[in-house]
Amino acid sequence: MNPKSCLSLMAALLAMATPLSAAAAPQVKDGDVTLRNFTFATGESLPDLRMHYRTLGTPKRDASGRITNSVMILHGTGGSGAQFLAPQFADELYGPGQPLDVTQYFIILPDNIGHGASSKPSDGLRMAFPKYDYADMVEAQRQMLKTAFGIERLRLIFGTSMGCMHIFVWAEAHPDFADALMPMACQPVEIAGRNRMWRVVAMDAIRADPAWQGGNYTTPPVQGLRTAAALSVMAGSAPEYFQAQYPTRAAAEANVRERIAKDIASRDANDFLYQFDSSRTYNPLPGLEKITAPTMWINSADDFINPPELKIPETVLPRLKTVTYRLIPSSPDTRGHGTHTWAKFWKADLVRLLRESERK
Image 1 (cartoon, rainbow, N blue to C red):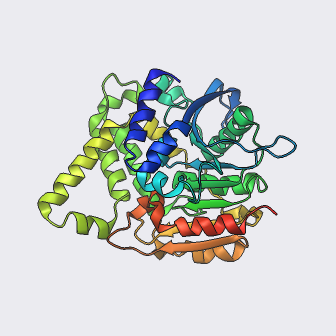
Image 2 (cartoon, rainbow, N blue to C red; image 1 turned 180 degrees about the vertical axis):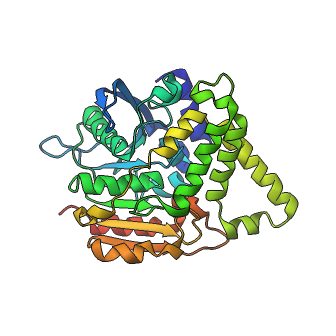
């Protein structure tokens, strides 16, 4: 592990202030696997595609040597596997007796293509980086599991936002790969309507900034990034929570400006463009009947990105024979789209899914 990775990992773990954090810290390991001559759906290829990951726990093997307790957790657009070490997630799930107790499960937290410490445009190729999509990202996950760990079957795939959509891709491309699936905060339909509109406006803002220079910028295109970050922050907002937490004009203005500033500081413009455009080919709707694994699909009523008013679940659930759906009601405590990472709202659903999908 390089020194930068060590420092990042230690910072993430130190931020977890409960006794669980201290117990889990020694079990967190960083790793990388290089996928040779990886070919993308566009026909482009990379001689070396780096996939970074973190793991917690220890693999358990059956008589034939196959790992039987592996769980893969997939992050959202612009995120990384490190987000699942945050206390609102980790402290609810990984401890003794908790749903994903690391003494019982082998947890794998990948950084997907274009994200975190995995290969991405900002490594040097910029806009010459292959134009990856969700199918490419899922295939890289599959190859990572096989190359790094020899895994050809998972106990569970859990995913949030983009990771949620990856699960629907996984479930159709590899129906027997996982014993159970838990997609959080997405829809199994093409990204269109308002969902596509705000994304394309964010991307267009970066491209329209003169400083972007076709991706060959010498200084960050801050004005374009500011618009893109503002749209991202508002898309992830939670109306009841924000009203309760920031009930005055001054408080609301200060908070949103702080959020946008932090978002800009964490972004690379080219990485952002690739991350947001990678959903362009996503559309599992025609193949929903291919999904056969027990699935717990959960959305939130205060999610701007996946509003319940569209009634998409009601439309598709008759075709999803193994899927249970739940909508988390909006409240002053829920976090809009980000409710997917606050395990207290859905931990019982995960317990139920694991129990009902237990291998006989």
